[in-house]
Amino acid sequence: MTGKPQRSVTGTTRRLTPDGAGIETAARLLAEGGLVALPTETVYGLAADARQDHAVARIFEAKGRPRFNPLIIHVADLAGVGRYARLTPEAERLARAFWPGPLTLVLPLLPEAGLSPLVTAGNDSVAVRVPAHPVAQALLRRFGGPLAAPSANPSGRVSPTRATHVLDGLDGRIEAVIDGGEAAVGVESTIVGLLEAPLLLRPGGLALEDLEAALGRAIPAPAADPARPVAPGQLSSHYAPRAEMRLATRPAAGEAWLGFGPQDAGATLNLSPAGDLTEAAANLFHYMREIDTGPGTVIAVSPIPESGLGRAINDRLRRAAAPRPVTDPFGRSA
Ligand code: AMP
Ligand code: MG
Image 1 (cartoon, helix red, strand yellow):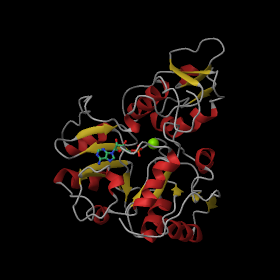
Image 2 (cartoon, helix red, strand yellow; image 1 turned 90 degrees about the vertical axis):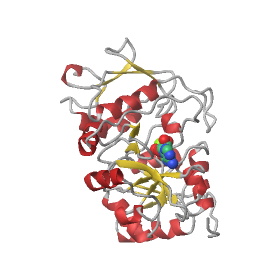
Image 3 (cartoon, protein in one colour; image 1 turned 45 degrees about the horizontal axis):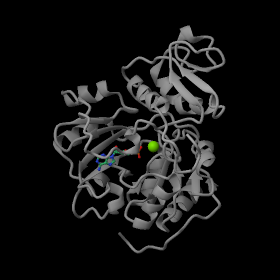
């Protein structure tokens, strides 16, 4: 919304340390309208000042992300949320139970919020999260404003859980990445819509069971509505490796095998030899990259229980295995 200085793609992406000097540089780049990838506990995010139209537009450009897909804003604390969104009683309840943490709430947008309309795709609702990662917290406090931040990867591809993953996809397209090590949760935030009755808009790093227990009621997934445009996170093909991926109980000859649990001892990589879903979520995107030897190969993935973080893992795996669009925004063939 503001006429701040306009930056465009620099060609050089700086690698910043997660200390005071790195945070200071990142905050300055963001204030100038730059793009900075930052570690959060879920995955690395690609941040821009959510109040600057041009900066937010550059997120879509750098990722090749369709413009109709709204972005999550990140703020340091609950008081920050209250500047942009109306906190309903159910929102307060979930916020007190789970923030900071891997939970995003979709809430009514305050008319005076001052966010770029690109953030909300023109909706009168806004998706908000208070991340727990100490580096994300430090940057939000130093920056002092809302950061729009989707995952720091080309649209449709596997989300980054390390700084090197960010550079693999976006080097030269963004100003900087803060290297904060491995993302602990490993899958994106759980998104709950609280505009009317609560809805599970995306399974993620916070288990549905825990949310329902805190709220004292069921949180169903929305009924499919073909009239509503789908957001990329909800598109059938997403999180796609370059190799073909299929869900199977056993691999066929010549296929790579992404296993889960003690019975998959022969797997190429095992998401959790102990069968632990939290460990599997943390390993998921890193292993999907590691096992991906490129087009022409096939990755077979073992079944994961549909409970706890298994819901988020299965959601990502189903989308990774879904038929691909013919071309993607970066011109690679499907
Ligand atoms: P991501 O694609 O990981 O950046 O997550 C953003 C997702 O949050 C989008 O794909 C939407 O599904 C959801 N979202 C963001 N803002 C809104 C909003 N205002 N209303 C409904 N859903 C939203
Ligand atoms: Mg994403």
